[in-house]
Length: 215
Image 1: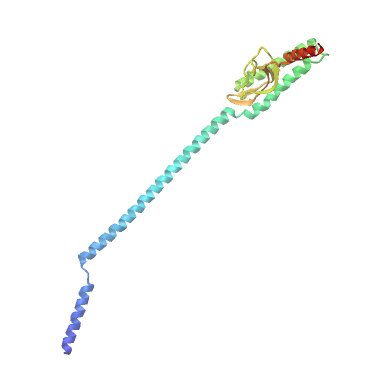
Image 2: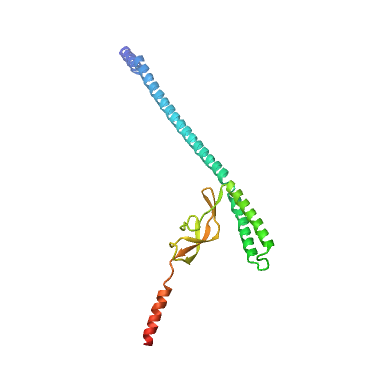
């Protein structure tokens, strides 16, 4: 009886060992599947990294191109308009010459004298030289007389009645305007025409009323 029990125990142990022992082929397949899965994960990660790098490189090149364009634009503007502030300040020379000429012309002590004539001639030479220097540096006067008022170039300071001109026509230049290439340095200060008022008509109406009352 005891022998039979020992035999049964041995057989049970053998069965358990068999159950615990796996098929070598099955193990190999499991390993290969696991390996393939890990490789796929690895490949996917590498693809993501490549895409990220490509995106970063594309963004970097785009930023570099934008910076290059900004630099080119700033360089061109500096070359074309670098003297903008200086040119604007230099306009004071033109204004002072104009004022000086006007003061001398209005001086009764100098009126019709040879000294005044020669002084004005010298002023005119200096004035033309200044305009020539301005012109060589693309600084030009704004033409305004007998032109329609352009708010981009002219600034109306007063209105003058004129029945010979269309309303809004510039008939007086108070201060010269200038521009450097296509950029405005300062607008021309001008007087523009307007239609005459109806003062005469009103006076006639008032006169008629007055005459009627007297009758």
